[in-house]
Image (cartoon, rainbow, N blue to C red; front, side, top):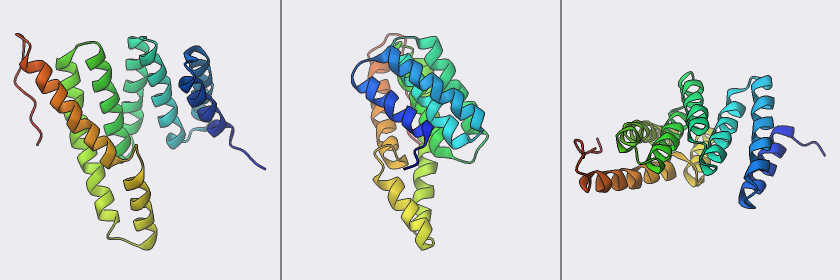
Length: 178
């Protein structure tokens, strides 16, 4: 039976995160990122960058997490995939919420909200397409990390940021959904 070494590393890293072995997860995802970059496939590099950033965030290595997520924004920005780009902005917003930097969180949250709306609209257009497009749309809609689920997360994050800003004496103009 043939296995994909990159997918194996992703699985091992996720298992390590789930077991609280963050140093092991970090090492595993770093190897996965190296393998993905060597392979040169953007669809492999993006999840590797996200996993590296998530582990860094959990370890409170915020500068490393930000660097990984920003790199993800740069790589995803060279594609037409609003889903990945929106997802990285959502990760950055969460990172800045952790650091109580609501201004930066709000900036990335607004970007994620717009991009994830575009991604969700794309899925809805696919639902009207060919059988293959409809199958892809169904997969994306049912995916717990698909555009619709992430869009809901972005809306909830927006409410949190607004409520936090409302309670701050340094509140800026509230963020409003488009």
